[in-house]
Every structure is written in C-alpha cells, then in structure tokens.
Length: 306
Image (cartoon, rainbow, N blue to C red):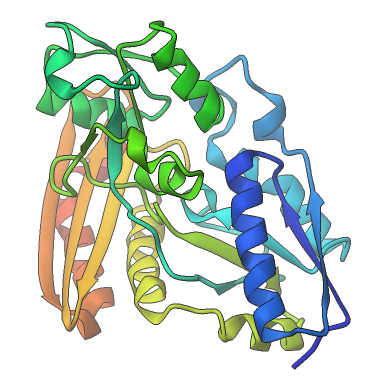
C-alpha cells in the first residue's frame, strides 16, 4: 500500500517530535513511495505556561487544535502522547493505532551524579501531576511537593540548577529523548500507579479515511492496544477527565493481566487504591470489576458527583 502524501499533525516539543518522527519512519517502512510530512501545530497547552493544567482544562489542551486540523483535512493523521488523549473525542475521529509501548512507570530524577541517599530530610520534589504528587506523598510523607510545568529539558534544568532536589517524570519520555541514564529510581506500578496510557503513543485519523486506517493497522502492537483499551474502558466508565488525579494501568504478560487503579479527591484527602488480575482475554471484564470496586468505595464523591 502507498499513499502519495501523508501529513502528520503534532505538537512541537522535543518529545512530540520524537513521536512524530518515529511514526513517520514506521510509515515509510510500510509505504516506501509515500511523501510523509510533519506539520507542527501550536496547542493551547503549549501557549499557556503560567498556570497549572488543572486550572485551564487539563491535558486535553494538548490535542484540541491538532484534532481541529485533522477534521479540516489539513493533516491526515495526528500523533499524541496517549496519556494526553481525552476520554471523549469527536465522533468523526478514531484512535486508529497504538504502537509498541515504552516503559509506563514514573521515575525519580536527581541532579546528575547524585543518588537517592543524597536527598535531604525534606526534599523539594517537582511534579505538575496531582496523581504523582498524592502517591509520592503517601509513600514518602516527608517530601515537599512543588508544582512544575515545562518540557523534559526544562524540568531537568530545574533539578540540575538546584532549584529542586528532584523531579518526577515519565520513564518513557526520558528514554525516548536519550535521558534514560538520568533515572535515579523507578517507582513500581503498585507504588505509583501510572496514568492512563502512559508510555504509549496515540495515532488518530478520520473515521472515513479507510486507506489510512488500513495502513495504520499494520503498525499496531496488539498487547499495547489491549492494555490501552482496558485502561480507557475504566476511564470512560468512571467518568474521569484529564484533570482527575487518576492512575489506571493494565499490565499484560502472556495470558495474564493485572489492572491497578488509583483515584484521589482533588485535595488529596481521600484516596482509593485497588487491583484485580486474571486472564488477558478477560481484561475488559476485569476493568468493569475494578470500576465496580471503585464505585462501591465512593469514587463518585471524589469526582464531585452525588
């Protein structure tokens, strides 16, 4: 199969461009005769840097303008970090492909050359995520959490300059940008439940673009897709959004799957944490079981619903 020209819509951050170029190279392998272009689109999330995402609408701000360009047929597909991809999207668009997933865990990063034992008694640790903040505070009550925005390099500079004692970042982003050696400590999936879709890439196109959907299907990693589908099934059922302090992670190994969940009130005072496991084929049913447990534990109240 060959498409004459393929335009990829993406943000302009270093990580977003890595993901777009990864997608471009995979497409060229599958469709050598194509001309694959990368189109950088400024999003609201990129433009608003002086406020926390929670205040301005959450991570969905990183995809809206790209989706508009896709709907207007200014680009042919969109590449997003899957953890930024909203639970609900325009009906005319579809999540056509989830390629192989990177390490989904969160990582603690100290200044270059330092080890975890070098942290002071009450370290100042930076993160822009309430999910990370509340789980870190539960595991390490002495940590002082500081809000943080900016791309990976900006966050690394803040810790290397001494402004922060450490930062918490996604291991996948560090690995993809060649900073894997900066990881001081990987949090286990039980210790810090990852965000929905963390470590995965979302490739989106128009639902009526059959030729593109067929091509993207050849890039799909089936294990990653099954994990993502289970996680997003839970997210949609819960009614969570990009601003919800929520972690949900499906880990498939062979025919076995473990689903871990974490949910907090926006002030961190009330938290729910649980897990279920079983056969991978039953992942959607297990997501429903975990959702039922969260519902019975009072999830609606944490989400502000009666």
